[in-house]
Image (cartoon, rainbow, N blue to C red; front, side, top):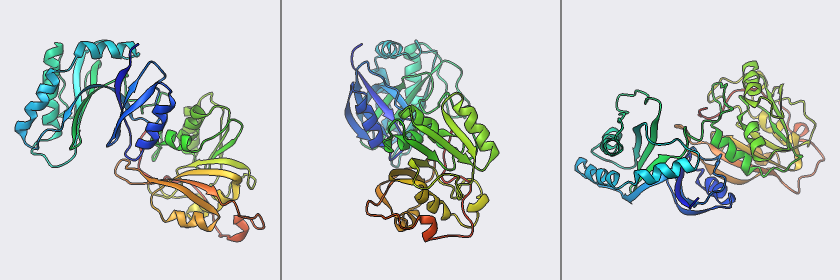
Length: 378
C-alpha cells in the first residue's frame, strides 16, 4: 500500500494530542495543523486514532474562496478535479466501503459569507454525484441520508478550502462499545486524550470517582491494557450503563459517593475524571452544597507520585488543587459542544509532607456525590 494523504478532525483544543497520537503510529508524518484538523501522510500502519472525531482521505485542497455566492463556482471546479476512482480504490484498500452508493456532504466555514453551509454542500455535492453517477442527498432539510451514501466533508477556514472523504463506514468518535448512555456522558475522543495524558503503566491503579457511563475507564483500558480500573458512581443508572459499556473488560464499577470514597489514602496512581460540578446533571449525595469536597477526596487518595487528569468547567477549581498540594502542570482549553472546559493535568507537589492528610487539614461537614460537569455527547 502506498502512502496516502489523510486528514483527522478533532475537538478544538485537542490538535496537539491528535498530532502526538498520529506520530506514535510510527508510519505517519504531519503535513499541517489547522482549526480542528491535522493533515498527515500515512503508510500502511494502524490508523485507529482514538483522539480523532473522524479520519478522512484528502480529496482536494485549494485557497479559500471569497465571501460571495459567485465565488462558489471555484468549489465546483475543485469537485470536478477530484480523482474519484483513486479515492475509492484507496478507501477500499484501507478497509472502508467500496464505491459510492450516493453522495452526501457536510460543510462548515469560518468568517462572514453571503452564502450558507447548504449552498456550499449543494454546489459541491451535485458535481460529485453527477460525476459518480449516483444520487445526491441534500442536508438542507435535515433528513438523514439513505444507507450507503458516502460521507464527504468540506471546510473553509479562511485560508484553505479542504474537501475530504470519510475513510470508514461511520465517524471514528462513535465507539462500538458505547451502547448505553446517560445525560452528561463524556465524548470518547476527549476521554481518550485524557487517558493518554495520564501516561499510565501496566499494573497501576486507575480511578474515576464519578464514572458515569464508564467512558474514561474504557478508554484507559484501550490506551494501556493491564491497569487496575475502578469506577464509582452514586447513580444506579450510571452504574448499569458503565457495566453494559465495559462488557467483559476488566473494569470494576461500584456504588460510591465521590466525596467519601472507600479508598485508602495515597493508594491511587492515576485519577481520570470529569468531576461532578452540576453543569449537566443536578448534584446529589455529599457534593450537594459542598462541591469543593471532591478536591479533598482527590488529594487524599492520590499517591505520592500520582497524577490526575480532570475536566473542569472553569479555572476556579485549580485554586482548590493548589491549596491541597496538587500542582497544575498542564492546562488547555477545549471547545466542546458550546462550552469551553479546561483539561488539566495535576501532580502532587513533591515537597508535600504527610504529616496531615488533606481530609485532616480541611474538613467539611458534607462531601462528595455525582452529577456531570461539561457538555458532551456519546
